[in-house]
Image (cartoon, rainbow, N blue to C red; front, top):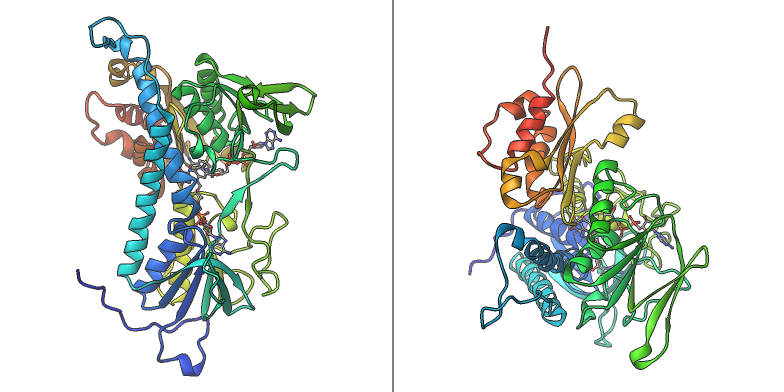
Length: 494
Ligand SMILES: Cc1cc2nc3c(=O)[nH]c(=O)nc-3n(C[C@H](O)[C@H](O)[C@H](O)COP(=O)(O)OP(=O)(O)OC[C@H]3O[C@@H](n4cnc5c(N)ncnc54)[C@H](O)[C@@H]3O)c2cc1C
Ligand SMILES: NC(=O)c1ccc[n+]([C@@H]2O[C@H](COP(=O)([O-])OP(=O)(O)OC[C@H]3O[C@@H](n4cnc5c(N)ncnc54)[C@H](O)[C@@H]3O)[C@@H](O)[C@H]2O)c1
């Protein structure tokens, strides 16, 4: 295997001292998640000497506990959801004697073994990639000691602290689950999303507290895996931040699949009661109602990992919520210190973290740089059906008093959807009423994460509804509904 050649060093606007002029710029990255490792690759390509300090493993929370494990678990849930509707398409389950068999069951221990193996393999791939690029990796806790020095306590070795002098520091330390004072996770029955994969059997009844994206994804997945689920939602409807039509549809789907959704209810406390076979959880709501279950998943948001790592002492400004304040090129309030990802709270997505990290390094190393543009970010909620969004939301357009037109088409009219037995879902598009430029869109469908791409292209390149409508789509296809909804948005001239 050939090693990557080191390109010539690029002078840093972060200000190397005269003695460093002939050396590569020294970059230290705190955190090896998507914000950190993508930045490391860019910095290395631009000739810097790069060290990544990570406490749990390469890939960070995204790979080890959040995105990769949850989406792998959801892949099994998706098959179960499809299998449940298979009889409509003429499929029967039979036992070895050819008699009708009753139901499919999930072996959660096998599912979770697969989940953790996949996460570990992905982490190993990232580590190998960084090694090939000659990026130094230190496993341990890092903290700033002033604006241009990082001190690392190596993980579990008892070895001495390592001191790293840096021309540029990137803080990409992510976030951790928020814990309510009276609902302390025990990792057995009161769980955060990072602890769920320890379960070796399906909970008999799972209470999910919090109906944001995390709560909705897990509630939907466990329901599909065959578990009784109660979702405690503090708002009028689940997914409060999302498109209202999409959120209402998902809530209806959840209820129709037997999930109990408790609206406008806040959890105050969670405790384990009983012992042995009688052990269960009680979740106390703010009106005094007690919800019982075998397990509870707390999905009440995250807190940024920014305290106790020397940021404020180095002069880095944090917001009230503890996030690092950054501008559109990921600069903090201190020259030479950049920040990326969930610790900045800009838009907690792996794709945005990675972009912020890349932008930071390009800026720090004097390469051409495009400031972060959130208008074109595509996001997806992995419920069944999925909810994918891009561009302006209807709420944002309304709040900005923007002129916009909206067209919406239910999927159940689409011939391919009928063939596949898909009943729930829609395609929605927002466009400028006169110019026809596509401003945003929502797709609610199985694999909406894939279907959103033509709308993302339209938003990114300011295409009009006519541009989208005039492109061929395969017949029959779900993407036909995207062209059709664009056609409905055509504004007749004259
Ligand atoms: C359940 C769940 C599912 C999600 N699913 C998706 C999804 O499908 N798609 C998507 O785009 N986003 C998803 N997200 C969001 C995504 O996980 C985050 O946006 C992403 O992880 C942010 O990347 P990051 O690099 O900022 O931080 P992280 O991935 O959190 O990585 C930061 C790393 O820094 C390490 N660290 C922290 N402090 C220190 C220190 N002092 N020293 C050394 N190391 C340190 C941490 O251990 C961690 O490994 C999901 C989030 C959750 C909670
Ligand atoms: N598919 C994805 O891309 C994906 C998946 C998961 C998370 N994420 C990212 O992570 C971000 C955070 O999502 P999240 O769902 O983890 O957090 P969140 O903060 O968006 O949602 C937490 C929810 O819990 C509720 N809540 C808080 N305290 C409560 C209480 N005591 N009782 C009942 N409800 C309570 C809040 O009102 C809120 O609706 C998302 O915006 C998204 O960007 C992305």
